Image 1: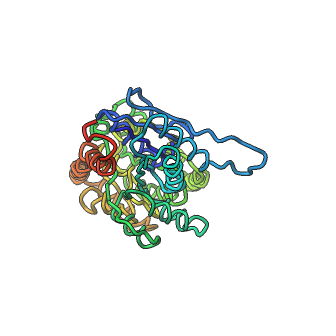
Image 2 (image 1 turned 90 degrees about the vertical axis):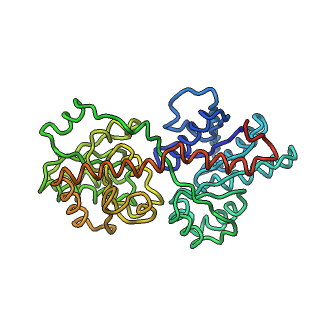
Image 3 (image 1 turned 180 degrees about the horizontal axis):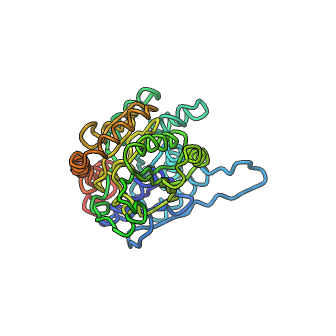
Length: 381
């Protein structure tokens, strides 16, 4: 098949999932065309079946905000026609679904071809941004006009039906993880550099937006550190970092917390970690948590959104109510004071992550593609 993938190229979950999906499809022999304004961060290896098309947005004095959606639609039309794409798979509803709809109509008028597009909902495009009255009518329309709709968790599926008048079925296809990539042995020198006295290592990774509640990470760590020697690694960057750093300084933890910045090689960091912290106000799925579990790292997370579908309370880690820092710290201390329990949770986390292995999920997408591509391309192409 010849597949166009539209996504955000950033470190966010939707961009990571879309990029990893495209790479896996390319490895299966499909021609995959990424269409976005910048090369995706995870698109860092050569594959003869992968193509990248940059969306260029001209700047004119007339426009205070350059019209990215129009530029994307035009680029989609060009790529569909030039490379004879069989379908589009757009990730994150805003503005990708509406751009895909517009491109579909233009291609149909120009060539007579009806190119299907699949929309995958990832989270804040529905639960936060999409509910804004400024966008809701367009989001509802473009989702309903999609040839197929998928969501990354049952929770997100339910939230979409709750807040939008969606007339079509939404198929749940969980996020996935490349188990082979994250199942790594720790680098001893790296671990000793972070925890020279054998301290336990806690880690958090996100885009440091308010919804991630990064200051809660620090407070959980501070309470845990009073009882058990440990270090904290903060991976990522974003608008809440200054507030987070201020909290660290007030608590006198400057020497116990290390900011790692944005990292592409998360597997090396997770390999030396003992507990992953994710206290988010909402997560549609929690891809970062799943990657941690694939690296044998149990998860301490809020019970918000789709997280209970990923992190099994009392088995792969612990769940706590949003903002309940004290309870979260108690659970972290419980794990860190019982090495046998911690090791069991590490194994449980890994075993549960196996159910989300990329090899189990890719065939589901291929089956969906073939359903809408049947009249245009052979199933074994």
